[in-house]
Image (cartoon, rainbow, N blue to C red; front, top):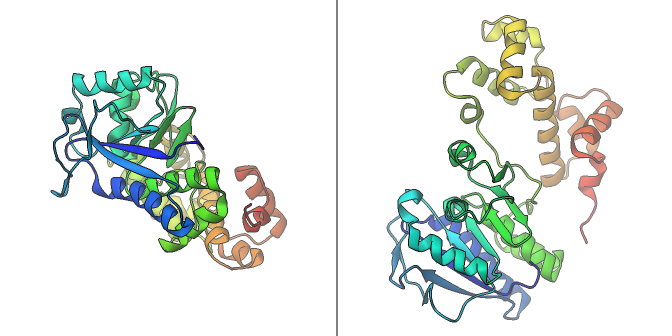
Length: 316
């Protein structure tokens, strides 16, 4: 993917403007701070006509999808009512591009166009958490991931919102080095560049369903009590459940024990602090409810595969 220089953006009806502009703006800013035309981009539609985004703004394409002048990679930009926006003609066009060995991508719900065209069978794929459960059962050949974005061979997929910024910054970094990517992120006032290993934040009620109000409440209590963690007995008492019932709920819906989930919540908070603040490791240890530095370090290594100090190492 490091050789990609000309990006095409296929805008589908009612596409997400924030996801589209997040991707394009990284390319523009890379040219600006790099003082060179590192990237070019073109906007496409299936018929060459202007396309309305979900916010009503019209984006006029520079080319029709069947134009003979094609980019190095085509990224499908989706939004609301994506199933209505993808028809057989769109699928046929994407299949033709895939047949020409063109790398393909999807941002926001744009991945659905590739999924329903069977162009992501056998690939890892990132989709917005709101759409994942429906697609998971419908397309078992696709390996759905929880990450913000996935780059798997000649396929790039990304969740919605501002996550395309992170995916494009990672592409910039792989081609021109992390220094240029960091300069772009600084222009956008970003605290850090999220990587492909960063999971997308999925609300617990989306994972377990609103009918499990007690479980949702317990997780929120955990997230609100990091520095002074509550005991399992306190958590159970606050939601008026027995410890045994609480254990069963966590095992059934989240496939972990309450203790393990609470530990993960605290360690993820620690990683966020280590990556985005100048707080010392000792301070982060205390703020995240650990009384022993060795316990913190061992737990951190077990979850993330490296010591807390690794987060403070400068990137190349």
